[in-house]
Image (cartoon, rainbow over all chains, first blue to last red; front, side, top):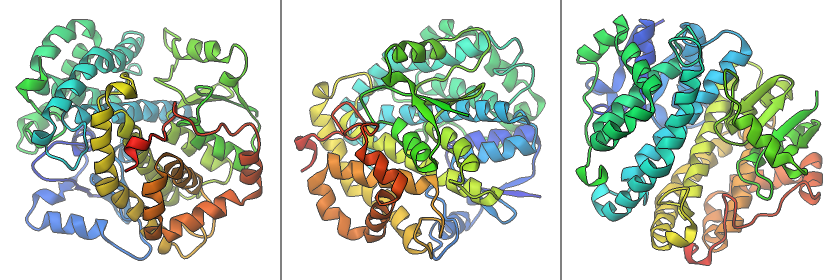
Amino acid sequence: MRYELYYWPGIQGRGEYVRLALEEAGAGYDDVARRSGGVAAMTRIMEAKGGGTPPFAPPFLKAGKLVIGQTANILLYLGSRHGLAPKAEAGRIWVHQLQLTITDLVLEIHDTHHPLGPTLYYEEQRPAARRRSEEFWKERVPKYLGYFEQLQSGSGGAYLTGRRLTYVDLSLFQIVAGLRYAFPDHMTKFERNIPGLVALHDRVAARPNIAAYLESDRRIAFNEDGIFRHYKALDR
Amino acid sequence: MRYELYYWPGIQGRGEYVRLALEEAGAGYDDVARRSGGVAAMTRIMEAKGGGTPPFAPPFLKAGKLVIGQTANILLYLGSRHGLAPKAEAGRIWVHQLQLTITDLVLEIHDTHHPLGPTLYYEEQRPAARRRSEEFWKERVPKYLGYFEQLQSGSGGAYLTGRRLTYVDLSLFQIVAGLRYAFPDHMTKFERNIPGLVALHDRVAARPNIAAYLESDRRIAFNEDGIFRHYKALDR
């Protein structure tokens, strides 16, 4: 089955966690909204009325007749089908729980540049964004990445949950890469606290399918429309 | 099996979505942190080192040997065991997707009083909270509740996904109740746009197990330490 991924073209955003999973799995997929007419097709699915299961927002994945929305939900679905998560229930629940914690972190990252709301421009909320970014680096990054670093250092394997890679490892790769892009000064100083996660990032980046993907034009470059935005004023 | 729920005592917070599911199901559970020594027990589980699956934050549920964190993940687990979600995969995925959208909404509700970060006090961020609340009511409430209203009006049954109640209906009850508490003026005006959700709220509140729960002292009252806080300055 060839999947159809629907996500805003031009940004990595939340779609990137799904792309990384599809790429690692070697699964066939179309990144629909990057094709001509794709955004209109995406909008039609979201605005479908009368029964049906319209997603609230991208990303969503078409898998045959299923339309699956919410990043962590898509990964839960893909994980069990492509060996990117444990098969046993306890492991599946644990990996999904970790992904939902990453989901919370991603929203807090977005809030660093949009503290007053997602529908206002960054330029309308610069002072608030500076304060939020300060709190983020002082309190939240140590808490979130400290948690994952502790899990990694106690995992007994190369990956967060042990010897086998899961979609959570792919997502943590993206978190490290994204924080490096958005907050290079902060991250340079902070990385000494998370040697396990930095090594995990490198290990994921070196996997053949991921390395090939990162070199390809399927990987959209980081930019200031996505979740990870580099604004110098926020990186002090 | 008797469950153990771990969540901050004294607030409904994110634990409430789990409580509502357990109560509706008539499942036996201890609300551990509300007992003497309970918060210390909760902290010990979260700080467990060396292997294990420590949750990042409450709420979490102990179900036998399993420790399940993240509200939507707990509901996914309970849903299939207590008839609070469809059994077939497509339905399970759809209901979970809806719950994850409610999770996003809950975080935006929290951000109305904490736009500059969760670790600062409300009193340190009043002007930003006013701006965020304004954006929330202008843009976000219509988008989120409009989405759920449309699903409810097209459901063809008494509940959001049809004739049978799911944990999503319980959570939407809590959203309507909470917004009424936190933003009474805004909500009074807005409710005319969501007649289906208001009727759903009433239908859930009238279910015998839920009605009994709401009358009991197991239901903590809304207050200004939780997610839904009534600050007059934010309700203009």
